[in-house]
Length: 134
Image (cartoon, rainbow, N blue to C red; front, side, top):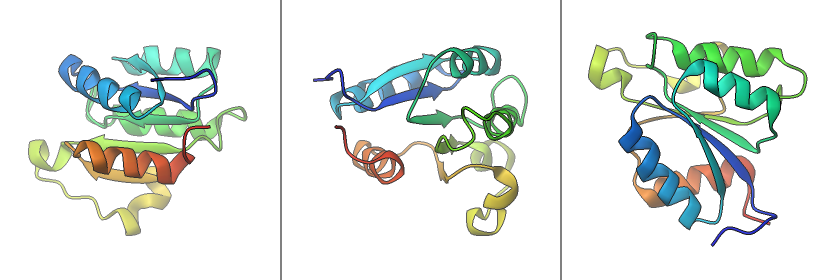
């Protein structure tokens, strides 16, 4: 059950099933979740609302859509310190493997994982990034 003091998460992915499943997991974990299915929609929501975390897919309209969102978040004063978790199936789709410990500086994200995380692992990573629900 979500309460008014719950941490707010923006979940961004172009896969409606992924959004539904992870929205359910995060909401059951006590978080308030808003979703966006395009980069433009995500950026508009980030400009008009306040979030405690953004979870983004890498490959959406473009192969690097998630990085474009991350860079935009880091470039804006009001969102510069917003934690970012990137979940992607890029390795599966492209064969390219990121080494997060080496690549995180240019990636501009706080955590990076391959899709799909188990519900427990997703909630653990979210909790580590933004803390427990108030």
